[in-house]
Length: 79
Image 1 (cartoon, rainbow, N blue to C red):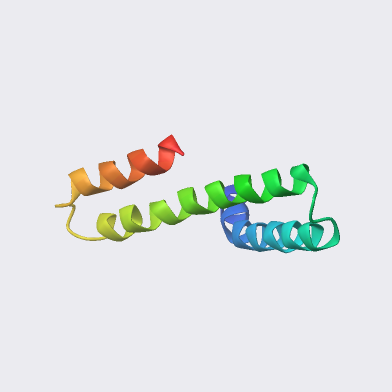
Image 2 (cartoon, rainbow, N blue to C red):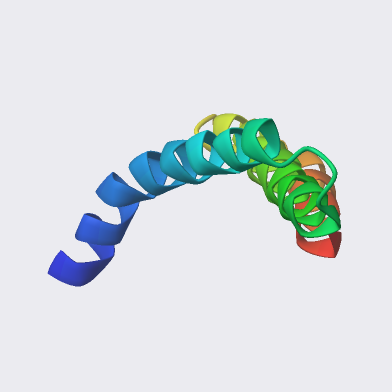
């Protein structure tokens, strides 16, 4: 359980650091296809992570929104 908590706490810092280094790499070498693909894949992961937020918010309620939670989590998993 300790390891999972550490990962949960460090995940936002890793996400922010990856965006920082990705944007820094694009600024240094704007024509590199590898840098663009890295930012595109990081953007997809960011969108998938943001799609989990409505599922979590609905899940904190009385449990009446099960279909909505399944919809949002299904979309997030498909990315």
